Image 1 (spheres, one colour):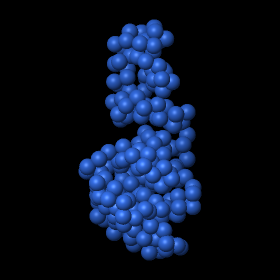
Image 2 (image 1 turned 45 degrees about the horizontal axis):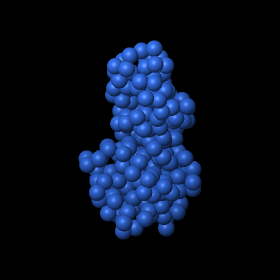
Image 3 (image 1 turned 60 degrees about the vertical axis):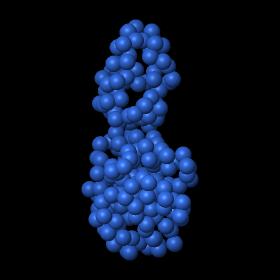
Image 4 (image 1 turned 90 degrees about the vertical axis):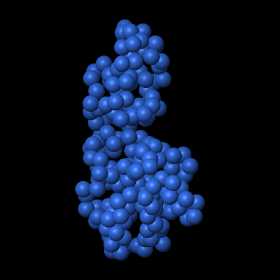
Length: 195
C-alpha cells in the first residue's frame, strides 16, 4: 500500500481526496496535516511514498517548504496542489524539485491521475509549464536576471551593461518583486527553469 501525505489547510480537500482515493486502482492510504510543523512531525512517524503540498499554508511559504523537503528527503516526490494558476508559480515549483503541479480547479480524477503518474516515476506538468514562459520583465531586467544567474555581482553587471550600480540594484529589486522570488538563488533557479 502506498502512503500519501497531504499538507493542506482546507479540510474539504482531505475529504474529497479520500473519496477519490477509494476508486484508485491500487490501495492508497492518506494522512493529512494542515501546517509545516505538523508535516515534519508526520514525516518522522512514517515516510510516505508521495507528498501532496499546497503552496499557500498558514504557517509557511509552500515553495520554501518544498525546497526544505527536497533538501531533507531528496528522493521523496512532492506533487504541488495549489489554487495558484500563474505559470510563474509552476515554474518555481518545478525549479525547486516538484514532481508535478496540479491546479485546484482541476477535477479530483485529474489529481488522482497525477498522483498515480508521480508514484509511477513520471513528472506531471502541463505542456506549457515546461516551455519557456515569458516572465513579466522588461528587456533590461531580463539581461540583469541572466547575469545574476551567472553569478555576477551588481558592480560587474553595471560595468557589463554600462549602467550605474544603483540602476542594477533597482532592476534587481523590481525583478524580485515581479517574480515573487526571495533571493538571488531563487532567481537563478527560475532563470534555469525558463531556459
